[in-house]
Length: 135
Length: 135
Length: 135
Length: 135
Image: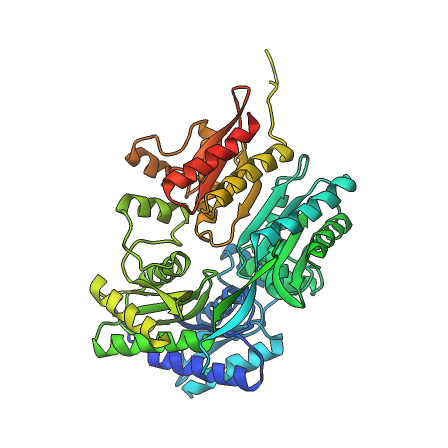
């Protein structure tokens, strides 16, 4: 019987690399964003809210990051009804809104990035630019 | 690098002018309302619940005001599915129910007014009467 | 009657300058920290949790930043009894734990930084190093 | 057996008279305040946050008003330990911080006013000025 297993954990330097890559992308595309990075324990690692980004996207960016980190999949892919039920039962910690992308290192999920305030396409584009910093 | 930017903030005199204009309109149309005014930081500035207005509209009036103040747009214009997701992820702080109107001074959003308890048309009419007090 | 007043708002570049100065200080002193920066509306602007920093300090760092930003004073200076009452009544958004410092630009409060996970002295030292980035 | 009893209910005109009297007092004494009026059902009737009043006093003003309205007594008179327990068990809806005063009409409690952001003495003084509007 094995009592423990080895896992990979995202460092804060890794989280900031993701955050800064997403921030750079949002600045280049002139789409102000809220950007959140969380670990696989669903706990916040790094965050920035850009000038002119929507206040209410603080919550959605974090929820997108948590959803991607804990499911290992980009947000917005499930059935709408099932996902809304999950959003309600988790009191908003989980969301199906697009803009959440898992963070992978050598094929292992180590966290998630969530981006909100732009159009859904802008959010996804920015989140993917952030996730690419780890590759 | 710039550390700060200049902005406009709604005063409490401005907020009360909005509140009183909406209250006057609701009285004239005999549609009792809950009326809320918030700043762009989503924090309450002024509120009144009129006789016979619905208790549950306390929450909806505040959420409508927050949504309008932070999006800069009247509530009720987005896709229903997307807006329900935003309502859940913000734990009810955001709503897509009509009756929220941004407050503008010289073209700058300085807050929002939210009105609830009447019909949706009455709510919008009353909120717009409030917002007009700043012009 | 005046409807608006002019104010200064902290930019995300300002918030990141504060965050990075605090992060540098925490690295130099080998005291891993949670570091939060908020605006005067009590809304999160920037955040990082360093490797080995305590998870529970995510909440305390944010609360310290909110308390300093909205009071204009460093945390931990009031009477213990009064401050515990304020913590309860604000549902934990306000705290009297040391490590929150207001952010000032030309004498005007534009936000707050909150640091948690080290000793109280380390938290204060790190928060002050962050705040100094704006001067 | 009697199935119902007659009660007195504070109107919104009564609530606004209380609010405005407190607002006038706060302006005269140059102590910016958050002022809340609630009914005996613990539900918000009227509210204003003055310029420069503390954001975190939104919550404390409402809690003070609720505490006074539902206990029929001014806040801050019980044993500290018991009151902190009540504050925690009500999740911050009840508070023992001074500045809450019951609203009475012909000896009957019809609501409460809560004031916060000044010194405790300023808060009580302002709340009493508001309550006096009903006499």
